[in-house]
Length: 265
Image 1 (cartoon, rainbow, N blue to C red):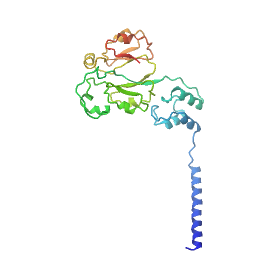
Image 2 (image 1 turned 180 degrees about the vertical axis):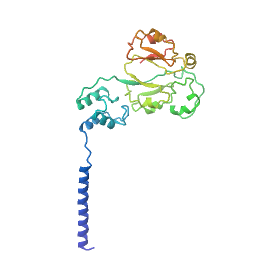
Image 3 (image 1 turned 135 degrees about the horizontal axis):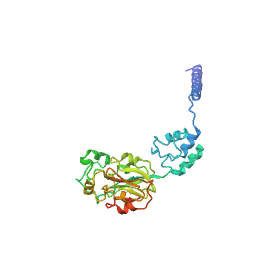
Image 4 (image 1 turned 120 degrees about the horizontal axis):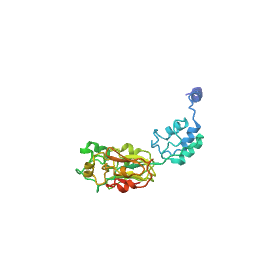
């Protein structure tokens, strides 16, 4: 190849490079996505767990919603009040007081307190037991299966299976709700961190059936209802339910419960 051919090839490459650069520059200006500085600041303040406990796909989704005014500044359950205060300052609003919530497993029917219909051998995943007889080997069809699907789902190592029942460490729990979503028995709910007493049972069977299946199951006898001075307890579907807003923490319901189905939190 002679020198002229080399010069022509170099010129062509150079011109193409210049044109491509101009095209990319113009495209960058035309298709530039404006970034909301508040959204970026909110995202920076969020813990970055992307757990979905706020109801959005991740922290970026929540940050966008907060910046647009579509979500509360205290919507992140993991960050708590400290993060809410930072975000409120970014948004220039007052941080609303929020009550800390934690997950709680409404069952204490461990291997010593419940009866078993049969021995199960198979995949140790609570969700799979929906396909075995009676929904699991325990006689109580409403109790914790104890195979730890919730343990695997928890990103904060806040829940563990002890003697066949899942137990939440409320100090480690961030109320992200992943354990609630994965529990096939719907045994887990969010309760106030400072709730003094909780009903540790989810059975909806009548009393005689529950007594046969579990020694600590709620039998719906209403003794707690009759003795609560604050009228904070009621029986629904054959099990006691405590209203945390009315509960004064006197402990009468726990003391009077003949089956010890009401416990301290």
